[in-house]
Image (tube, rainbow, N blue to C red):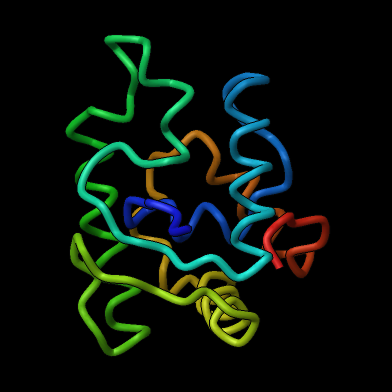
Length: 139
């Protein structure tokens, strides 16, 4: 199978430690983290993705907000520069251990953090990165 992710969730998965918006959201994200760690590929999508799924029954879910779409664009730009390849809908990425190390190194250095500006989880993610990504669920 393939995990459908919007671009900014490529950054979120780097620091995911089992915290989220709700119990359903966290259970879903835990399962996705397990699938990523087991080697499933990622398909880049435009808009809400597999991580967003538990929130989509709410008509006002932030997943559809313009600010989140802008966050996706910034993340795609930063990660694309890091990979030397475009991060566009339809692209497939194999997220292996070497790639995670490179992404986390760039994240900790602030090279891929433009999308994080204004995010309610930014302080938590910064603390996790500062602590060497201890306790993260994607490996």
